[in-house]
Image 1 (cartoon, rainbow, N blue to C red):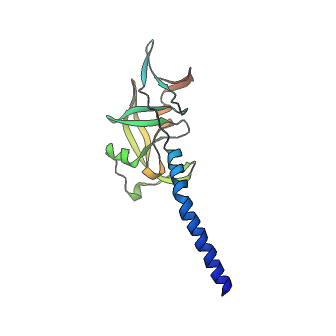
Image 2: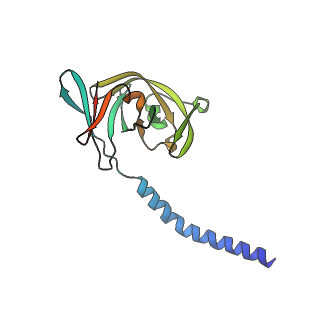
Image 3: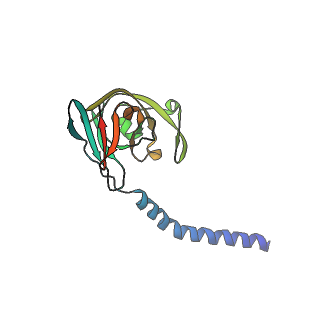
Length: 171
């Protein structure tokens, strides 16, 4: 009986310590993940007949930009590791996509594990002067995706390269 009481006492003490430490840990974690993202407006560049857009690298080392999806402006992180454009549910709803549970049929592997996504097709994706039609995308729960990703379903339709601290896209 004494061993059982000791066990409960140790568990109760561990829970008290956890209750005292957890808020600080969670606050620090939230602050670390809430890094500001600088969004650059795609800048057109004159290049003899080609349509070119330059996206400056943000202070965090990433390329973030705005794009027009079916006539609505959304902010994206350019992600060459993403096979398709990935949309957060909230932003997908702004575009008129409202997937229900049975629509989440595509298994996506992320750095955080595997998750189901709902496939959608975007009629028009415009980035500055660049236009790509009929672009594959997926919708992910907001909790699974911190920001929209401009993936290879768009990027493979344009020529892109890193040059002078900027991501240059041409069409």
